[in-house]
Length: 150
Image (cartoon, rainbow, N blue to C red; front, side, top):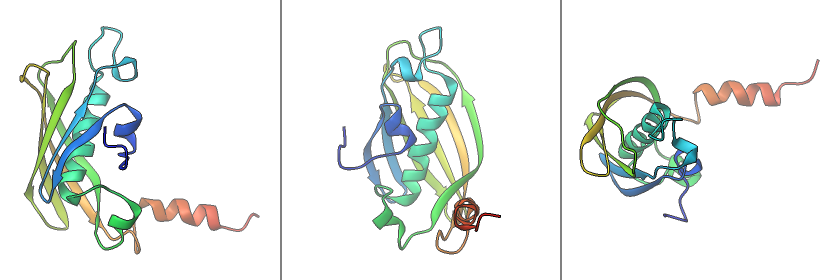
């Protein structure tokens, strides 16, 4: 596991990034009780979490740290379209993401593979590129935290 870099939700589920560069990322998620349905396969939400975090990393091109966000736009996911084809009772799942269009709205294709190489899911995602110093949903939370008590 990549101990020096944390991936928020993916790390909490036991996953990690294996490779990252501008426009491409690859991540992994082992099967565990944290990500398992009662039927002992991956929960759809865990599959989508893996795909979404790998897609965002492909856009960002490196570990998403406070330092790396200073001079980059943040990729807020605004639309996800996921097709789930099969599941995996063994794990891990591996996801690979490639940026297909860059701009204010950036589009990424992410493929998720089972432990034996089958395509488990394909996700197309659109990400609104936001300057965190100027706008974004997090600003509303900051405003509420900083608001005087009435």
